[in-house]
Length: 83
Image (cartoon, rainbow, N blue to C red; front, top):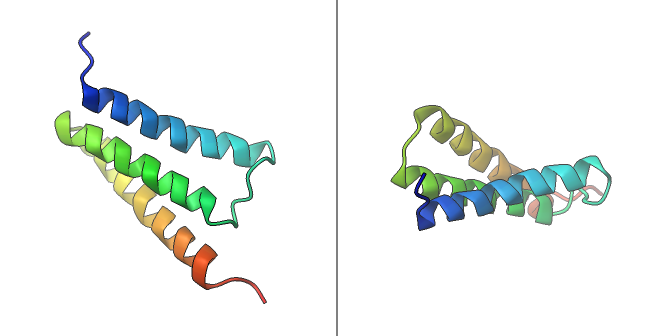
């Protein structure tokens, strides 16, 4: 198996998405803070970049949803803080 630069970019994205999820589950990252959706969004973008080189329709769809949900979460964390 030959790995290209885009594969390593995708692995970095997977690391961000899985890492932030893990940290949230063990109580080390607050999902209400902007960092959580920001890192998830960056992870999704990196995975989408790797998919632009080696396309997979199902992975593309889930990453687009992941990016959209992360953008909504980031907007909520930045602009709609609880009173």
